[in-house]
Each structure stands twice: as C-alpha cells, then as structure tokens.
Image (cartoon, rainbow, N blue to C red; front, side):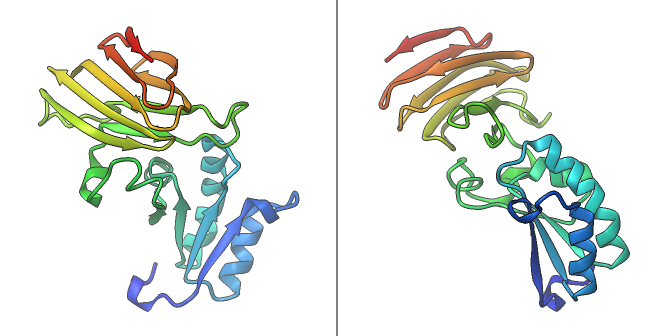
Length: 203
C-alpha cells in the first residue's frame, strides 16, 4: 500500500449495491479503475459475513497495492490484517473513547447489532482484553452505543462489579467471558452487577 499522503482516490464497496455479485469482483474493478483505498461498508451484515468478505477482498487489494479499510469493526480489521479501519462517532466517542491509544487495550466493547433479529438489543462486552499491566483497577462513565454509561471495577484481572446507567431505555445484553445477562433498563434507570453478572436492579 502506498503512503496515505500519496493516496488520491478513496472508493467504497457497499453491500447495499451487491445484488448478488461477489465482493472480490467489485474490488478488482475498483483497483483497475485506479482506487488507492477501498472501504468495505456492510451496515446490515453480521460480523462473520463481513470477515468472510474481507478475506476474499484482501488478496485482490494486496496484488494491486491498494489499502483495505474495514468500516466499524476494528476487531475484524485486526484479525484479517486489513490495513485500515474507519470508526464513526458512535464507534469512537459514543463508546467512551477519547484517544486512539485506548483502542489497543479495550475494557468495554460494544458489538454490532446489524443482522440480528432484534437490532435494538445492544451487546456490551466487559473487559474483553484487559492489559496484564492493569490487574486491579476501575473506570467510571464509559459511554457505549445505545445510550449507556458504564462503571466497572476489577481485581486480579477479574470483574468484581459493573454499573450500567441507561440514558435512552434501550435493551442490552451484557457479556463477561462466558457469562451473559439481558437487561431492560428504563430510561434514567441503573443496574448494579457483580462479577457473576448477578443484578440488583434499580428501575
């Protein structure tokens, strides 16, 4: 891939316009047309499908020395080796981030909702990749998509408590390791969870 300063044409592969055609065909056409960067945009596709598309597109873009940009899914960009990732406001600031360095060691990960039977159900994963240098600690006021504020505390790398405050009244599924719990918190309500995701609900 050429340096970003030398890139002039930023193109998109959008699943909304596939109409049954293969993503790697679009990628080849865009590469042949002179694209320097290609973004894979798949708003209504589940993560596994996006990952499969990226794996098909990457050999095409690599041969053409074109950078692939994954939209919204930093984890997929990392796993597939895509050169870049595009994060919008909801994926960055609304998820509680203030600096890109925080993306390297996430402690709260809001997952995509597209493609699920209930797209309003937000999934919040707690401590998905806690750095070894932070065995004990706590955070307050992390913002997540769907209108949630999250406080957490952990000891010896294990979650000890989490508090979720709902700003919009959306349902959510909280995940920690193999444990999950679904919550319906009224707007303005708060739920306190222990390390086993057992709740003390305050509507």
